[in-house]
Length: 117
Ligand SMILES: [Zn+2]
Picture 1 (cartoon, rainbow, N blue to C red):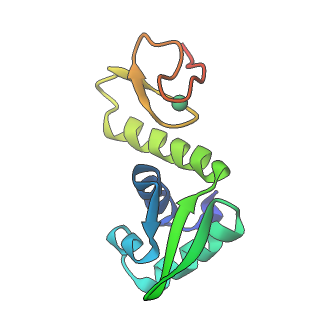
Picture 2: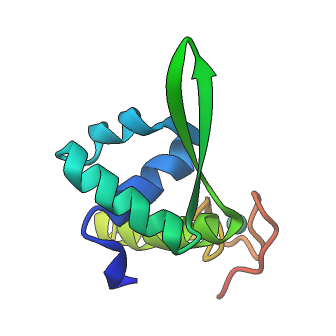
């Protein structure tokens, strides 16, 4: 997954949190238009995201995660949250969708996946 680019995790987690965004919204998590364009291109080629063009007065490009992208974004979020809160251990992160579950939960409350130990 390293070939997706340095900012791919930020974009994917952003998409996971916002569902569908305008392409220009990605500039909140990526430093430049050039970086955004190249990362989006790569993610689309890998089938991680899809883009939709709409004409509402002017052309607007919307970006959303594919099903595959959701799984990858969940993993990035998982890694991210574990890194950010290593010491607490108050919950289990679903390996599939990245949702926080109670630490004694056996199944994810969001997607129903089995949670390990
Ligand atoms: Zn889940």
